[in-house]
Amino acid sequence: MMEGVAMLRQLIGQLQEVLELYGSPPPTVPSNYFIQFQPQPQQPSSEQLLPLRWCYFNLEGSSLQDSCYNIIMTAGKSENLKMLEPGKPPPTKKARKGRGKTTLTTTSNSDDNMEQQIWQEFPQDLFEAVIARLPIAAFFRFRSVCRTWNSLLNSQSFSNQCSRVKQSQPWFYTITHENVNTGAMYDPSSNKWHHPTVPALPTKQIVLPVASAGGLICFLDIGHRSFYVCNPLTRSFKELPPRSVKVWSRVAVGMTKSATSAYKILWVGCDGEYEVYDSEKNMWGRPGNIPGNIKIPLSINFRSQVVSVGKTVYLMRSDPEGILSYDMENGVWGQDVIPVPPHVTDQVLAEGGGGRVVMVGLVTKNAATCVCIWELQRMTMLWKEVDRMPNVWCLEFYGKHVRMNCLGNKGLLMLSLRSRQMNRLVTYDLESGEWLKVPGCVLPRGRKRQWIACGTAFHPCLTALA
Amino acid sequence: MAAETGTPTTLTLKSNDDELFSVAESAAILSVTIRNMVEDGCAGGVIPLDNVDGKTLASVITYMNGISAIPADEEKKKSYRDKFLSDKDFETLADMVLAANYLNMSCLMDAVSAKIAQVMEKKSVGWVRRKFGIENDYTPEEEAAVKEEHKWTFEGVETDDDN
Image (cartoon, rainbow over all chains, first blue to last red; front, top):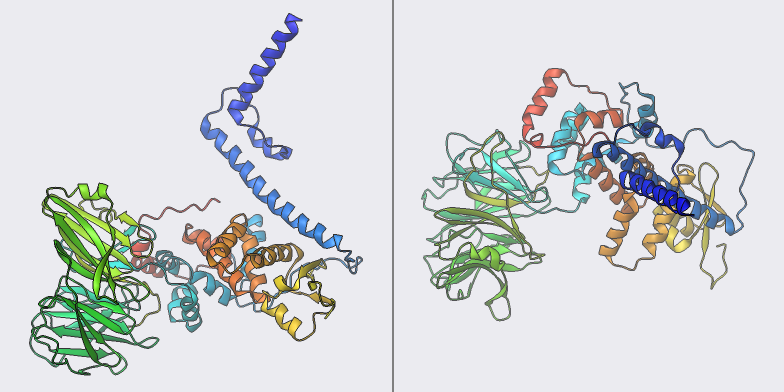
């Protein structure tokens, strides 16, 4: 009796050891899955165990699929469906229409060939539908697959596919102090900085991104003379004709998308001079007039980027504090006097999505500083606070003199928060209210963190033409 | 039409390997191809779907039933689609997108295309060529030039080609 209990204990002990080593075995495992995992003389290391688990997962996945399939088959049969033509052999090859690919394989692996079969028959238009849904960076990486994939940017059908894909979050095109001639682009969906070369941009002079619309970015040289429009993802680039006003004082720039592939750009100076560029006519014009009730000089807040909502652009002004609006289609100016709440500094405008106009700024009381978000109440024409940065983050700024700079204001904000020994980059999603830290912008193979000087948000678009 | 009024109409679909499936008309008309047949009054007997095999059709019907059971809530529909596609292997996805294209089901088409793109996103250029049987028709110099032009897209990319 005692002997029996001791043996049983030993057996249980061994069983437990085995279980600890291999984890609990799945109910049914085909014997061939064990072939590569013969019992080994020494204790297997954890790395050796990993592939085993992986196999199990794989197996469960496929059996799930099969059982799902069986359920439908049974459901079908239970309704007394007769299986037609039992004597007829199943077709050996699936008939498919619209084959467009003639490319050949160069690999000889037979398993691979089996798998490839289906992809080789894959029609070109369906490939385009898939490629149009790749993240931007992957799309460009795969241009090196073959000539056809490289030439997709010129394909009308691919362009149509792209327009069907839902617009993703905006990217940010920024200029760093260290590299004023090349841009650094931040992709919030992959949380990565990219350092593309935009070969067409002039390198003799410093050009800054000042506005964007429909995937195109408008650049202005720091002498405020020449305007350039480019798609930072492609080589599409254009220098705009010279404007007719020969005064090179500082200007605010707004950009809107007008028709499917057309855009308009507004510049306006504090003296009330302004012009609008229309890409369809490829010329500057001066539609409309600034009405007498709008006080000149305009006292434009140049820290704040121009916001475009539909066909209207909004600018922030002071003296009187408020917002200027300009309807790019109809050439109509407007002004709303809206006082800025007390203790607010560094305030800028932003586009909140759904036509909302939002203001972002710093609120400093005693030694505490916090980033706050206000939404414009169109009924009362007042700013209403809707959110503020999490307290833990604000604590970092306690007792410091902080300056805020907005590097993009289209639904997703990028804010640069700086004090003497600190430079924080954060994004704020005006839709979800989510605050996120942006990783430091470091050049590939570089170490030193780049200091972002200015930037603009843009919706990446492969097919936008300058 | 086949069924009497009062009871939900059921359609019988036949795959190209002669499997029969019965599916509620309300779910089946997610396919514009089938809807057109129903509207033209050609859906009385068995609807032959010459370009879809039984295994794929079974999957598509699971999707039709699943998605049509969800009321107009785009969030829930999206999460159903994600879950539905999560266990499909890469070749099954090809079958699905071809079937969705043939059946003219844009919502499935978009979801499967996006899923294929999601798998591809983490793969290397070589994997894409092998998998899709695409011949590299660049000269080595041309390929190097294209890669150089888009150098930024290769930086910091970790591919998981082995699965």
